[in-house]
Length: 218
Image 1 (cartoon, rainbow, N blue to C red):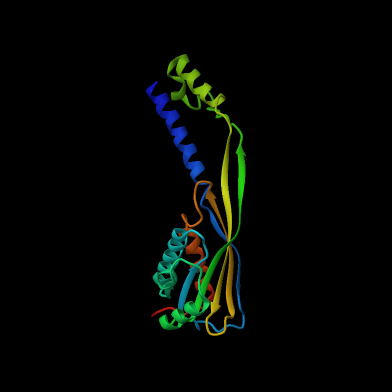
Image 2: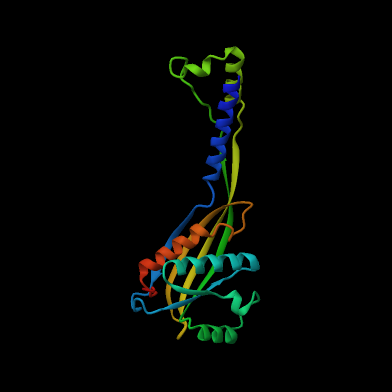
């Protein structure tokens, strides 16, 4: 019976891991670069995350800035310079010039929807004592318990938030849009956008490097 109990626990753990794998998936859907823009012409970026929640904004800006710096791109988060309130154009422009930023990243949530996915009950066929002998060696009650766990296992529903983001890169000198990306992230319903920013930021930085818009330190 102990081995039966252990086996059932393994099944439960596998199910938990499968559920965990269904969330926090991130992908870029569209990336655009101005074909006329000179490569490696921006040298320092200001990072802005548009969010009413100050913590979400700070987490995003800090992670994005750190990811850019790790790739040799100079960057600054905006909140230490201008605070958590709505940005004042004149003050923000002054801070960008003071810090030497010639490009500004702006990210916002375009839309957010809840997706419900139903997974029906599934039965597991062991294949008989010749295929999986040890599962059959614990008497009739062990076999009954194992079979009942399969028959009685209900279906389940997973709810995810699907969040679509838009990220734009502008040149400070004239406000020209030089790079843009649309991305999508799947989150568990209890998670806030910004809680799982690492894969999102990683993909944005990778796409930015591919575009060769921003110069890297040598």
